[in-house]
Image (cartoon, rainbow, N blue to C red; front, side, top):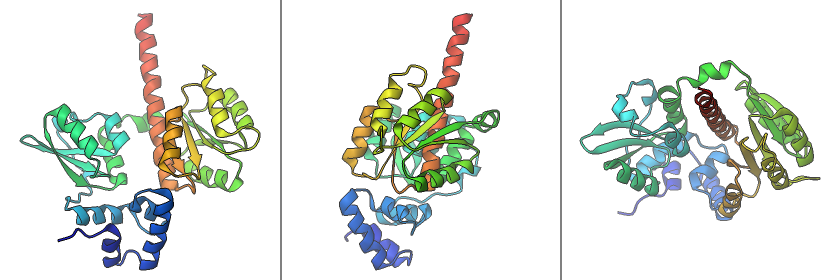
Length: 290
């Protein structure tokens, strides 16, 4: 029996219409992004809809509300916070030599193979929403971060020539308590970054006077701000474009138009990395002094 496609499952569950699916498939031909991501970007499905459809399509168990439970330390120790955040996965339980793993992308066979080899265990994927996995990671791996975050204000620099983009990003990030600074081109962004030394920089790529790539190279040449995570914004969503930007050294990539949930997730991840590295640097300086 042929496996049903995600679009068919979503239509059967009356979550999307055939017209919605046709539009999404046209966008998929241009962007080559997974259908689920395209439907999310179109704001016609929720994370939970995609997770349930994946569960139905491939026969993976669907798990939810697990972030509220306690997990044995030996289970949590199977992953570190960096791996969990980078791949949006969370260890659920161990049964003999099998690790049950909540995954936002249960089709990531490369990750499963890598973990299976490193842990000498079989990996059994379960489908979960990115939001649920992030909540579990925050509670069980990053419990100390919220208190530290309240002790200081995290500064975010937004660089984009379009006022509508700046306003939308600013509105989403201010809800999280971030202090927002804005620039309308790369030259202005570079000046503010040099003076402010922000915690994270988010920049569009094509801009007047100085584009995002030129600004990024100038930032990298300045030792005071070279380690600041820079997230690229771009309307060019082809995998090749994203690959090129990440290869240059950009910390992350966000496609336009901006999805507020995705923006917050990427910025929170960048803040976590920044805070972790700063604590490691401070620890190194402390031991060097001793």
